[in-house]
Image (cartoon, rainbow, N blue to C red; front, side, top):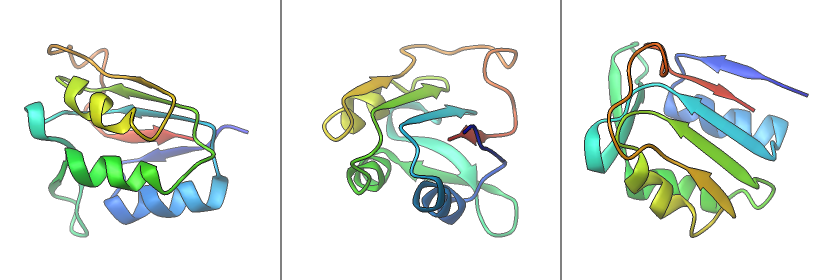
Length: 108
């Protein structure tokens, strides 16, 4: 089963992971450099989610086998998450908007 979530907030990601128990997660959106990825807050504004918090989130879900972070400079997040998930792909440089669409989404 493939599920998508567009312009997600932090709690939406957590809830979707609980509801669908995915084996593969694909994030396409924006990275904020070494420290974070960008989601949305409750009011629809950009919310910076730090690397440690993201890694700790995925630590809670043993069913996830692979995560793809299609966001600029997401290598640091991939390095942190791979401590808890067997396979993680992150980007080590900037990628264009055609490769990482402006609105964040998750495929579960």
